[in-house]
Each structure stands twice: as C-alpha cells, then as structure tokens.
Amino acid sequence: MSWDVFIFDAPPDATSVDELPQDSNPSPLGTGSDIRRCLRENFPDLDLTDPAWGQLIGPTWSIEFNIGSDDPVHSIMLHVRGGGDVLAVIARIVAVVGGRALDTSTGEFLTGDSTQTAGWHGFQQYRDQILRRS
Image 1 (cartoon, rainbow, N blue to C red):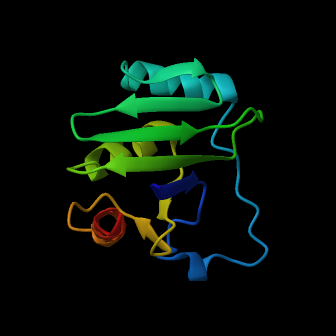
Image 2 (image 1 turned 135 degrees about the vertical axis):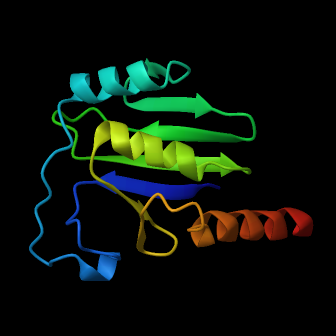
Image 3 (image 1 turned 180 degrees about the vertical axis):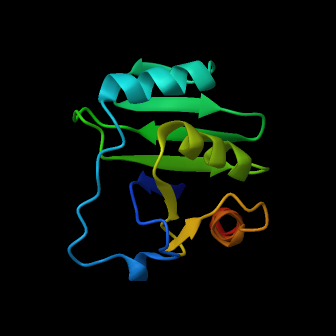
C-alpha cells in the first residue's frame, strides 16, 4: 500500500485533474538518460540499479520511482510509504525532473506548500486503520 504521486507535464494553471483539457497531450519530461542523470546528481542515495524502478529511502519514509523504460520519459509515478515529512522531498524531485506532481488520492496538484498534506496524511490514517484491524 502506498500514497501515489504522478509527475508529468501539466498546464501550470490547473489546480486539479478536473481542470486538465480533454485533448491534453503532455510533453515528455526528458530523455531517460537525462532524467536518471539529474536524479542521481541530486539524490545520491537513490538506488537506480534497475533503471525503470528506483528507490530512495529516508529516515521515516521510502519512495519508489516508477520511471519505466520508455524513452523519452513522459511521466514518473512515485509510490510513497512510511511517515514523516516527505513533501519537501517530492517538491525537490519535481524541481529536478520538471513537470508537476499530482496527488492521485485527492486529484489535486501539489504546489510545494508544506501545509498541503491532505493526501499524505489521509494515506497514513487509512494505512494505520487497516493495520489496526489486522
């Protein structure tokens, strides 16, 4: 179970997935080699042993990077697990690869605002509720 964040080239004025044009054809984020190089340079602890699936482990969280093998790279899906402050890390990832981050649980774009925690906190509450049942 993870909180999923979809990074892709989206219009800068859209605040949610509902505001995306029906005929939208997003531009690529970049070539696979450029995206991986930028990520390695900015996140030295990122494990890209499998170039299609990276993993970054923080003090209280982990992020799997589903980059895929397509070239150019049109999107990256982040599968986030754990707890703590991961929003700043996601903002840095987006700054490195370009595009925008869509919180798939709320349908809203993350802006980098540290108070924009509904999806991340909602995921943790749901996860904890499920684990208590077990």
